[in-house]
Length: 348
Image (cartoon, rainbow, N blue to C red; front, top):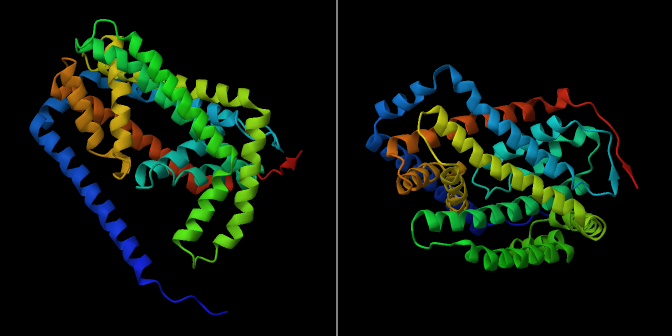
């Protein structure tokens, strides 16, 4: 078979993207280093010492969040596939592995999604049905995140003294979020994966693997259509579970600050968690939003009357917690071949 000629343009594009990611990562590291230098390592360590032997409690809120998100994924499995019972903790481990890849690579939080399906393949989860469930769960997660951010806006505006009664802002914003949700679902119902493959064919016409992907994309789209037609309640339930995870993220901030000896109102913890989300989304090009998340946290804490040292310590502790769970996810990914017993799925 004749091989297509080497495409220097495509190679150059990949090189530019790699350089861009490296530069973005270095900017994140530099920003984090500047924050630590500005605040002082001693002040950060002072807040850490206040936690003392209670430090293991910092990991507990994330367990609840992981279970919420795992349940949100498990309840959107297409009804076209029946699997043997999979314990929730295994759904959670699969999700941790995928999120570790998302956090550690500049893939716009998408590179780890196939990993989640890969982690459950030993239970007989077909790739097409698994990817359809990941797409639906990602949509529910995005919708719940938008609603969560909108929930924090009135509190934030009121806290800054810009408006006295901010709840009138929430209604129109929720209507916009509802319209955005309908648009996302309609896009998926009309053949999301097939459209992506056709786009790739136009962008990279010489990529021969796309010919095989077309049939596979059609099967994923069929699962998506069947899900939205037959199980709309599952999408709502998944969105509620993910929203619970976001809410518990605010509780995590409250617990962290309490253990650090920083008195904080629950509404301030909600404001920090909701307003940090847009910054993390805006910094998708930087792996894990390194530096941007910390700078945003320090800025928000300053607006709420929390000193920079406490704000940076809070973000550093969350980063440490994230690193631990990323390690657990990567360890699970490496061990999945021995840990999961093979099962066979049965199509309805």
